[in-house]
Image 1 (cartoon, one colour):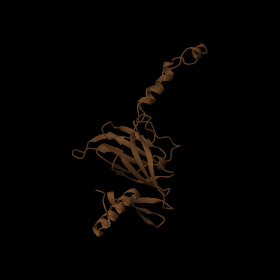
Image 2: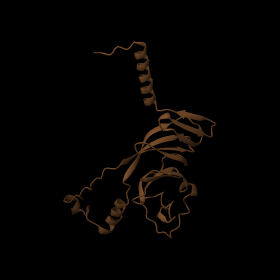
Image 3: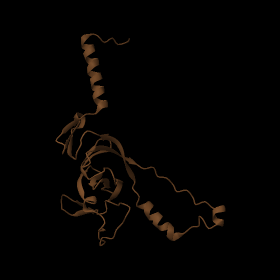
Length: 215
């Protein structure tokens, strides 16, 4: 993935290691032959003012434009390739896949936890817990390269029996999905629709004079 400046068409950022954000490969190193091209292909992506949300193979990756790195990922967000993604309000993301599922995710910040000190005393008598600088270097590098956020699954729309090719999000009006099973399904937010029905009911009762509010 290449991020371009739309004014002068200069390259602003470059990312080739979506499938393993903790791995910093040399630019000359080739992709391993054991990896299938479909597992590391970017099928679709969308963005907001802060991040690029990319569908790579079966996974979802969040690339921060300011930090120029992957800050969150779900390597197996679906059982098959992710075909389409879109952002929702409140740092949420929706994705659909060849496995027939449509899932809703939420981008959450991880709590920074401090590492506990290595125990001493009894264990040192047997050589356990000794500080090894060479062994600690990969751990330190892994912590530096760790993702800052997480993608948490908050919803799963089950209704299609084949690959969900695409969807359209209409904000308050709902979501429309199309699939290889020849179905188009219109999804509604059940909690919101229930609230709207209750509001209409109270308005109708008030118009008919059947609603008595306590004084």
